[in-house]
Image (cartoon, rainbow, N blue to C red; front, side):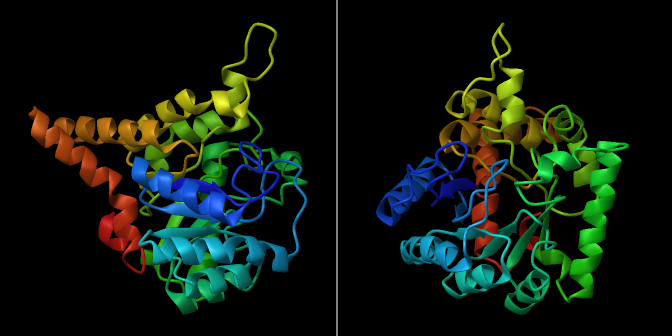
Length: 299
């Protein structure tokens, strides 16, 4: 999943793709590099970010979604608002990526149920301006799994089918630093809960702190892509459904390596050709999901 931030203030590339023409060109470049889904968002969720009016979010997102769909791309919309989700799906988006898991807007579940779109429910405890205060867990892995299960129950109650749902542990959201690593280390447990899993570690601050120099200063977002690709490889090896990244090429290669590794582990040695095909099949998972109402067929 390639990140397309149509915002002036995203933490990693704010403003670079704010113009619709620039956003579309960037998105198509990500697709050429191996992105199977293009995740278009019009509101920054960086720590401390203020919300934008819904009309502004719609004005940023919809032209880009329409043009990418017209170009034949599989598009997801990154939003917590039901009205934006509905409009984007009507414009051709095939997946709604909601960092609030339906908590921010009580109408979201009904929209997802009504449209039949695939839906990413992320673990979330509050909007960007307050989320850091909620980084308090008894056991972060158990707590996140339990809270995601509660979101699934709420979605089911609203009529959302299980085969529409993808879960996301919400790295960096109400998780400022060390809380992220146990979630990554225990991804197989989240995968075993039975839903496809999306991981969004790309360029996040916990990677910046990991790579900090002797003075303790975190490296800037653009210098976190190698670490992001390492997470992509490990996450894919753990069986996740997709990784959401800003820089696609390295993570696409990492996913192919992990796919070959998993195939060899389950079937024995493979030749060069088989390894390549295994990698390609995994890289295309998101694209396949985008062509169906939900991710059921590509688990």
